[in-house]
Length: 376
Image 1 (cartoon, helix red, strand yellow):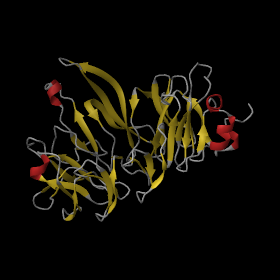
Image 2 (image 1 turned 120 degrees about the vertical axis):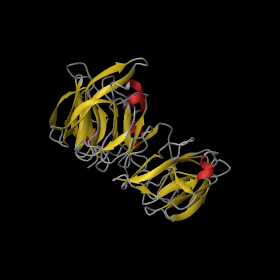
Image 3 (image 1 turned 45 degrees about the horizontal axis):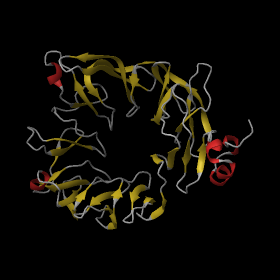
Image 4 (image 1 turned 90 degrees about the vertical axis):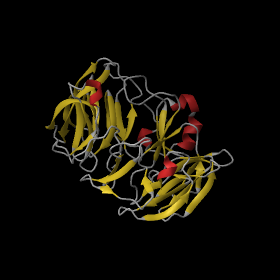
């Protein structure tokens, strides 16, 4: 079940505003008790106690003791940990000693010095090891598997993308100018696109965006389309396109307006001033008239979007009434989580003073026990 970060309204005995989690109904399921937190992934969420990071399970139990400088999210059963950092001359770039732990907190991949270490996706992680002999010039990426070994031969001067739906986007080697990309599978084998086309985005919903090679250098791209995993050109799209998510892709027309197409190439809407990618069945957009709106999966206007609404996965929108973070440590923001119907399932206690009791009664639909109007 999805969990959403919240921050306590009052400081704890150590003078810190702790973070906790609510569920999609607004019910507090993990009381604020940590100095900072990150979203759940693979049943674990990173939390900070003082200056060190550890992990809790979905009940709020501390299952991995806080002892790391930094941590990443769990994926493929592993999470990155940083045990040390230092700067290297002459440009004083930061490198880090990074390894990986499993869900029990045991080290599965021993920490080594790297420029960058990414999260695992589909059993592969992008990593750029540091070479003392080459120094700052040693920044070369490759993919490793969950044992820490190279997943396949090949290094890249550009990180490319993580694996998604079994494929990743990496630079062509040797790299031409301007850079061209290719799609590879988890064994490093190239997906050969239809003749004359080259990929420029990752796979999503079984298709990947491609364009004519001669048009990549000249931008804007005037002829684009999508291929399947066999490299077959499925359909063409006039204008620039993005990757598919939720079976929808953004299209930018020659006049600079935006629209969406589905995985068959059918145009769902056009003429938008702005458009964002679909996530969890909805997207943010700006209409031709300049109205900020939320679109449903059919690219129809669901309702107007308020200026302070920010996307949060799981079908809720995070709303901040003051421009502060909920990562932890500082005074709590006046904030809330809103459903797609525009009603709040969670609101900070300070909202009553700012908006008034009548506004809260009209807009709050969360648990009565969590209402800002409840009697202390």
